[in-house]
Length: 116
Image 1 (cartoon, rainbow, N blue to C red):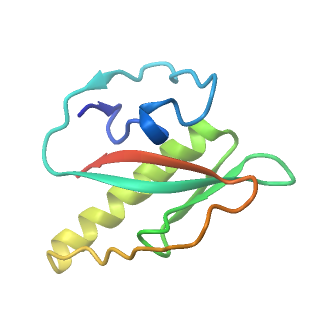
Image 2 (image 1 turned 180 degrees about the horizontal axis):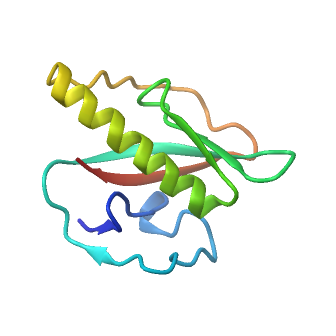
């Protein structure tokens, strides 16, 4: 398992790239994770006015956005990293929820690894 930058590796189903033709932002590199790593599902939703919103069906209330898919995914990884760290520090327990909703039209399902 590897982590991109401080928080994430972008993969789709079957290990294929989650968002085609996505390039790594300048300064990002692959590295081996340290600490605790969690594989999280997120869903990218294109917005009518441009950009993307993103949420995690596994951790309700953790949401983010970005001008493009890469930025939205990076922002969501940071939001998940903060939420997971807070849950672990406060109670030692993460309130995972399995949301069985189907992927809505236009949404992209992405799996990321968050290192806490």
